[in-house]
Image (cartoon, rainbow, N blue to C red; front, side, top):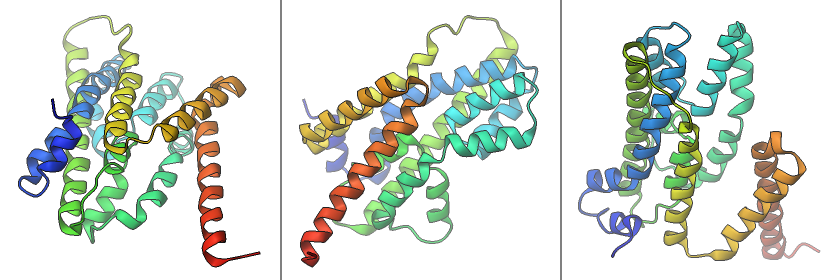
Length: 242
């Protein structure tokens, strides 16, 4: 059976839309229930479902939106929500820097792609391998746009259902870890470099042991430090700096 990611890569030259849809399917199955969970929690605060949809469109940050729900429930001010969300999503700057050389879009679409660069979108875009810049740019934009649509749809559906019926959402928070696991497996199929994934796992475990509450930011900082040192070593050798 042909792995989904490789199959999608094979379609890139013939049908960009099909490729984008197929590549983004793991995100679809993660974003809909996760966005719905946010929508249900948001509706429980008494807000209209249209506000949940607006947050999905304008803010588009899963962890940030869940954080906002908790802060709003505790009557936090808008400034507090803004600062907390900014700090939580600061990791996206690292994603953007690592993709600068591969972002071939120009104009408004480039700015949109920068805005829409979530964890899951970054994971998919980092797997794209094609020699044609034009095809790559189109696929980047379509994947990002589809993922955004999935998230907005989940937020809207959850908020609307939350205002209509009552049901338990216990355990639905596991959707995000499950989504990351699927994306990691697909990325391994595309890259086939076990040492990279073993190193990433080791960094995650070490960060969890050091500080469980700050595991994500700590692991990102450690990974970036290793990448900078590795890149510096390559440049050191290339320039023959002694």
